[in-house]
Image (cartoon, rainbow, N blue to C red):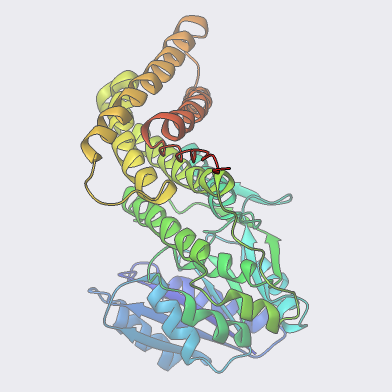
Length: 396
């Protein structure tokens, strides 16, 4: 009935303890037949040896060995090869309370829902983690709402399940092989009209997590941009999937200024998240004003290039240098807004916490974003007005 995949990479220290705990929980408290699949993606330590030993010792435990890295790749391979009716996965650190596993799976077994996710941001969730990871998680999920119109609350909680028949339809469309795999799967499911069930979970952050936050954020931003472009161009056959489930066709993609606003919002959301990540990483060494300057310069150049190509459809090198110079002028105005906001905060409320400081910067960046769109559309990337045809007199 259920196949729980545990993707692992160099987890020799925690693998055995976690798998034994998961196996004990499923054996004693789960009412359906189950399997645990340890999906090792190119570990270089003793992880594959431990996985093989557990598979030989514990009933209903199997081990899968992949030659390439990637959590998404491991889940794709394990779910594709499985013969279970419901496919799930959980992170090897078991940060999520296993008591939520049955509520996660039950709506899929009954046929009520198509996918189910654990959420750390829902009412009733209890979460223990640091403010930095909390802020990044909130920013990421808000970005998904703004850029991809996502309605699910938590994309990256490592606790999800999907019906096997739905997985067969969606997995061939998912391109990411890393951490963005979850988000891409959920967005495609939502755009296909599938029902996503959310379960509030108790979640305790793993202090020994080795996830590279900056590299993961960059990969996620790239994935968001790629997926948004695929959705906007209609490259994915989601209309067919939506029709197959009896839920109608997807609405058309807006054109003109609404489309430009949508694409600008996508680029702006990605830029804001990148700016906040850079600011947090650089603040310790550069101070608030130096971190603000460096983060703004990097994201401003990338923002101008992305809007030039994605929002306003300008390709090639013609006037590219001029566009970037004009973009830096707009950047200087944004720098003035954000630096002024920091100075005002320091003068009016000295000693405030980091969360308040970031909130003030987000507000100042929002004002700068409005200014940037007006400048882009009416000045930097302004299209020449169409020539008015000259009226010709008809000879008598």
